[in-house]
Amino acid sequence: MLDALQMIRYQKGIMADLPASAIYLFFQLEDKTHLKESLQVLQKLIDGESAVLGLGEQIMQKSSQKMPYHPYMPKGNQKKLAPAWRCDLVLWLRNSDQGTLMHQARQIIKALKDAFSCIDITRACTYEASYKEDLMVSHDLSGFEDGTENPKQDDRYNVAIIDDKKKYLHGGSCWAVQKWVHDFDWLDKASLQAKEAAIGRSLSDNRELENAPDSAHVKRTEQESFDPEAFMWRRSMPWIDDKLQGGLMFSCFARSFYPFEVQFNRMTGEDDGVVDGVFKFSKIKHTTFLWCPPFFKGKLDLSFLSL
Ligand code: HEM
Image 1 (cartoon, rainbow, N blue to C red):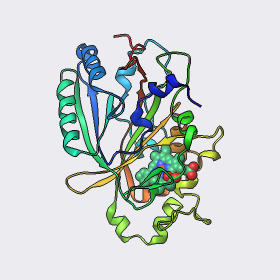
Image 2: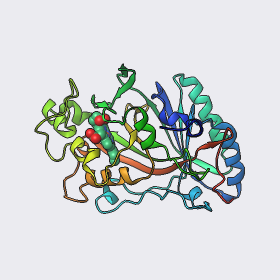
Image 3: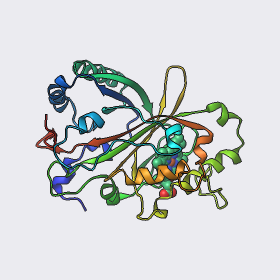
């Protein structure tokens, strides 16, 4: 159970229902001499709820404390399937009103322009979202329900949010965000059986298939099957661009990057050579590891940085 302090310290957007629409902004740090003032601007603009903030590699290098952070480091097969790219800041802007999102995105990009260049802007939405027993459920654009095996009730906080005596860690979270592009022509042509075998669940009623192959996504990622167990809080959203390309902005939060790393190793066949079925219809554009700082006295706590 979380104490009252922690309840208000994490970035609330991490634990909230998915918004109907969102914009993800990805930035690279270009000019370190303007970093300090840009972070001060972000402390004024980011409330953690309508906008979730994650700090990446070049900013985290300025840490004067031991943090549960390291950048994404591909190994083996991952060097081809999900190569490293440099991204130093990600903002997940969340709002059902797309005009508001657009203005918020413009304001932030402008405010950061002396220090950061924006390297990707991705618009996201929900798909076939509905409520099941008070829980909001959305779907991936392949049609499968996404988020079914997310931890429930208090377990969500225990999985996603750090509980620590140190003020700059308490309420923080490790965020892995990975942009996948779907092959909708494959999905159009593939048989129901081929699609269900890729995921390991039924498209019509989401039940787990009994005879799913070893490559089935839910077999590769089964959280209890790792030692130690690898639970994560997934908040992925479908994304769509103006050419009607799209896919999944896979997004997960945890107390470390361990759950993502061990699951992703299995997905890319690092241990047994079996590659996850999702690669049949989707490929990875980019992958970023981020630190989501907690709030302290109403402001993002950046006291771990020495600037
Ligand atoms: C195109 C990319 C992906 C798609 C379309 C996708 C879709 C799905 C679907 C449909 C499910 C079954 C329902 C559910 O429990 O949510 C699922 C489960 C899951 N996925 Fe993914 N996923 C993708 C990438 C990833 C990645 C990169 C990871 C982690 C590295 C991951 C981790 C998980 C986990 C932990 C589960 C629950 C497994 C369990 O314990 O049963 N997924 N995903």
